[in-house]
Image (cartoon, rainbow, N blue to C red; front, side):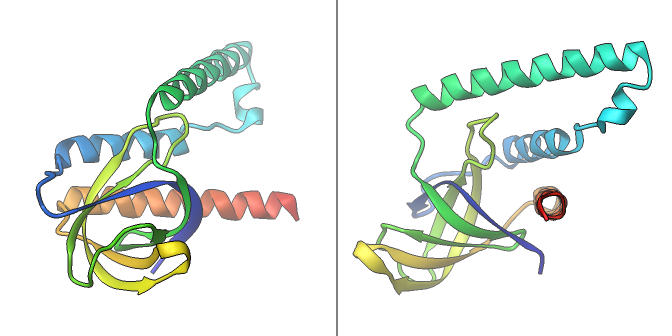
Length: 172
């Protein structure tokens, strides 16, 4: 099972009182995946004058989106960043909470600084172990998920994993 280790804001809501809008979740995952795929190589972008102009315009838009995202994130009350291990099927995280094994929860992940919006996924607590400072080490299993959401989540994990491998290769 492919997974990524990252640090993102995470919140957990116990109970099934919060509904998940799978259409909105699917659109958000597609946007995240488009952002991940939208980066072009500099050599491709600068082969022509139009390519160079497009690359400059794309950089300006990226900067604008990052600035707006920062403003929204500053205004929003995002949960604290937590180290997580995320796969298309599950999430491992340490949170201050009191949930029991088998509990139904809604997980809110904020995977993008550019789009400080929650990715909401239903999950079941597979394992809750006592951690430090009253926190629990949680293993959550996503589901039930809409098949299209599951596919886009798997694609998101794959793209993030691929980007991490490329970044690690450049650094070494």
